[in-house]
Image (cartoon, rainbow, N blue to C red; front, side, top):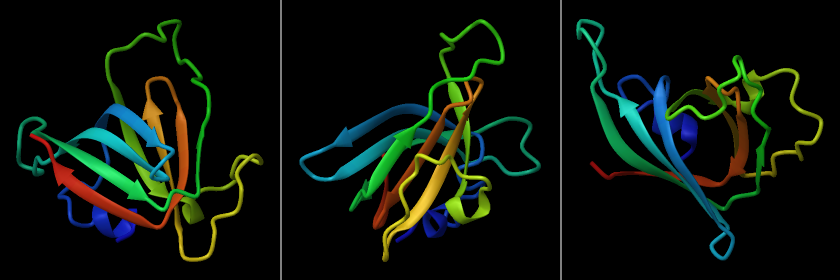
Length: 130
């Protein structure tokens, strides 16, 4: 499953998900994202969050850009994010390698620190952790 297909299984995709952690397993050539995803509906007065782990296997690359602060506070407790396929992003950072055949490319942009997490992988899996 691609991340784009996985996002379509969630009521709000990965929009406004909170990034809690990121782990890269070099031995398994995989990475995981610990997230709280938004399960609220348009008529809900607030967010209804649910914890999950997204595991990306067949990791081809992961490029993380440094924070670009909107304010002097780089030590915020939460990062919320938006996600989209790399094909929808232009221009791409020049340091990105090409997405290999059979893989998908995605970018996670986190706020308020504006960190870009650019990945290419072959498979995405979601597991509920809370």
